[in-house]
Image 1 (cartoon, rainbow, N blue to C red):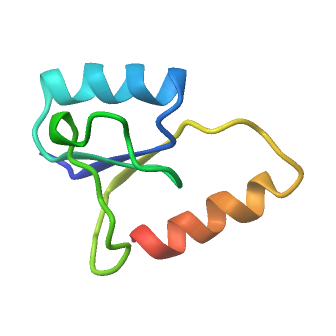
Image 2: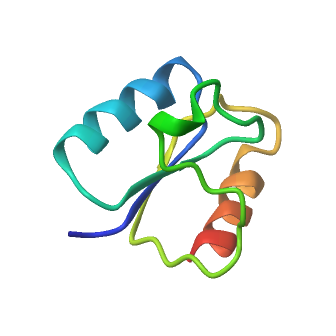
Image 3: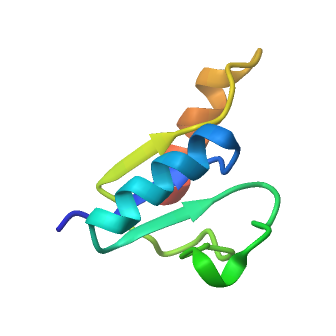
Length: 77
């Protein structure tokens, strides 16, 4: 199974993470704020040495959205 990460654990990100983690192995998540229930998620604090094949972007569009996505892509590839 491909290693996946969900970026952003707001309302949408939590739902995406829940569905994926119930059906697949190797699903992780990251948010700029730590999750409220860290024992229930595969939360990544260390942003180095991870090779994800699929990245789910679950944070709202903002002025520098493309740049933020590009930076996450560089960190998590």
